[in-house]
Image (cartoon, rainbow, N blue to C red; front, side, top):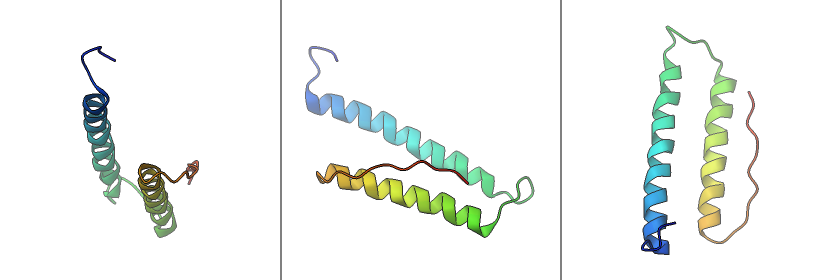
Length: 75
């Protein structure tokens, strides 16, 4: 951390970088929806988006001061 950078500046810098990465990863994930290139079941789709929703809820809870445990994802 730069000596001139305060906690809020560091938060904003890292939050912007990490949020952009998550949004890009979601965009890339959506490329898998192309049925011409990929085959998947509704159960696999449900698991993917359920895991994303759970992870988002856990992240929001941590910002509210609640501790929640992350889970591993596997189809």
